[in-house]
Amino acid sequence: MQLYQIKYRKFLWPVLIGLAFWLATPLRPEGVSGAAWHILALFVATIIGCITQPLPITGVAIIGITLTVLLKVVPMDVAMSSFGNGTVWMIAMAYFMSRGFINTGLGHRIALNFVKLFGKRTLGLAYALIGVDLITAPATPSNTARAGGIVYPIIQALAETFGSRAGDGSERKMGSFLVFSEFHGNLITSGMFMTAMAPNLVAVSLAKTLHVNLTWMGWFCAAIVPGLISLLVVPYLIYKLYPPQIKDTPNAKAWAEDELQKLGRLSLPEKIMATVFILALVLWMLSSFIDLSAALVAFLAVSLLLICGVLSVDDVLQEKGAWNTLVWFSILIFMANELNKLGFIPWLSKTISHSLTGISWGWVLAILMLFYFYIHYLFASGTAHVSAMYGALLGVAISAGAPPVLAAMLLGFTGALYSSTTHYANGPASVLFGTGYVDQASWWKLNALLGLFYLVIWGGLGTIWMKVIGIW
Image (cartoon, rainbow, N blue to C red; front, side, top):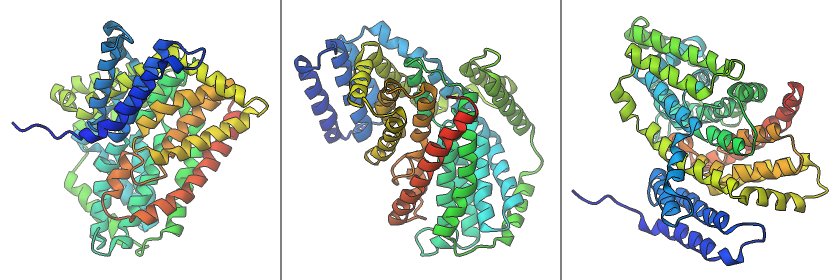
């Protein structure tokens, strides 16, 4: 065999910065222990490695935890306990559930039905495709899988049906508008549900280390108003700012009907998948009231899919995204937790909050949101960004007097919304921009405008809504 290609140059910055932090241990601030400083050095090096990616993120995380044990920062048994995190396993189970949508073809059928119902105009098509994302989001923690695996194939088929193809000058006929609308629909739905993308669950785990418990239903109730407003308004804004050349699509309904006819009647596997999906949603909504953990609900759903034959054991074993996430997520959450346990995060929060004495918590929270949002221009991974900053920023907000759940929610929502920055901001951005339908200048310019809209709606109106429903 040939050796795999490793980007050795991209190890340079993680190694140099991690080493610099480690060697600076004697100069660490008063109040920070040597062990806390050492885990900080390894955590920072690991996060930078996740950004530069000399190896995929899982490989970087494995090296990080190996060094943590090898350098005797934590013992092996403690490090291995990281793989028992219930939230991480919930993500893996949700990945397996999303495989059921693909196996059965239910996601494809849902998309075609939306096109059939709302596809007379191009704007209606955009709302229809976003509706597919909205329905599948609660049980699909890979927003990349939703955008690239379920919705984009429909976009491509529709665009090409109306003569809009990437690379031949016809992109603006329809494809550009639909691709960009789906990207924003995807990031909005990612913010609306705790289980709609992996970084949300990173945030939930980090909030828990600061004794802030976020529930599935609590997240949904907080996000429902800003989320629905965004879903209704943003496609229309894109329609006005970046209009398609083809505005009427009378053939779309006929095309969808023809595709549905080819699929035939709803199959038994699709019926089982739909039933289990609805059951999981109901139990997630009720989980905080009936003392049933969200992770157990996910395990129950996957068990039912296995028993009914919708999923096979091979499907579970071959779901690369789930096992990949399980490894790197467990390691990053463990390292972040150790920063808190060893006292670094409490020290940092107190230090920053003291420097903000005299400033109201509202202004502090607004500044933190803006900083968290715009610093994402430097990140190519939502997960790396959340892992690096969410816990520290939440600690600062709480120390400044902000209501803990409000701060946790607003920063959690920001972890989805800051993807409205660059064409490399997250997985869906890379997938949809990579289709070639939207040029880079348009992507950045339109996202800059829509990002301001999100900050006002989710930060301003969202705060008022959470006051109305008693979250703070």
